[in-house]
Picture 1 (cartoon, rainbow, N blue to C red):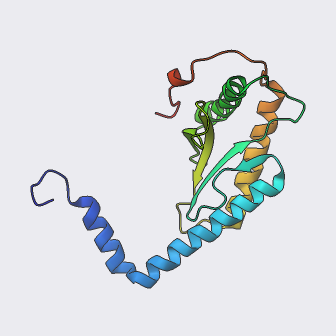
Picture 2: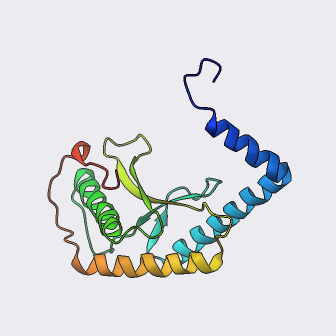
Length: 171
């Protein structure tokens, strides 16, 4: 910045990238990322094992949650939030221990505002111009295998936790 309060490396890198690629080159990359994100969203949804949270959103970020078996019932919203959040947190914990090969992150809490209990979600970005449908298929196989493994061991019984005290496991 003019006051030298921040480095100019970020804006300069963006300027150089835009100058090198041109507007149309940049548009091609963004369009490709968006196309790959839509393909992955559709694959996750088609599997029947995940719910897409930001289906209507445009861009390369996909927020999704693993579905819980229909035979599991919740007594109230607090119980549901605690169990679902623990379930999503287990995905992040297991991925962190395996090196998180697909760079999945967690949204610490999303809510429509109609409830005091935030729900966690998984988030993945399409970031590489080399992303393709084969990589999406490999990710889908990975996350489905992971879900099967977690579902076989996860305790879906209710244990009250303080939602605000949960720390982000990737930080």
